[in-house]
Image (cartoon, rainbow, N blue to C red; front, side, top):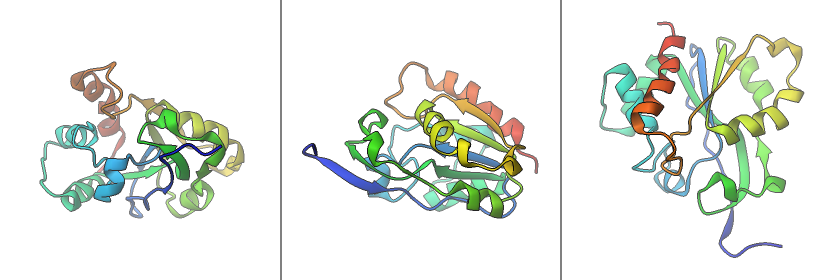
Length: 175
């Protein structure tokens, strides 16, 4: 049964370069992000304010924020390549519609990535269930960490509490 307002959506290409060492994985871009064609495009999502605070730079444009990540050896992608969802909430994703991104090829190309940080529990859960069992032992060097979601829908923690947890990102990157 298809619900009214459910749409099939596709995620973005990764923000990545050959020298990145850390990968941040979300689940799927929100409707606001899809409309803006930007990762974490919702005005109240804490992702960009956290990244800018961590690195002490507050670029105005999206392209400058992307450059900030790349300069600091950070890649961003989503676990889901596509799915069907009603609205923007992860809880409204139809589990049967999920198609995950190709992480075998991704980690084969971007060999310097050693740590993967999940932006929220759904990204971690889907990755553990639908990606990890299919990764060869060749990728056993990867370390995984789950961070609190930067989504405005996750209000259990304040910005400062989220920022404190996300400091692990800055401690993981080597320039």
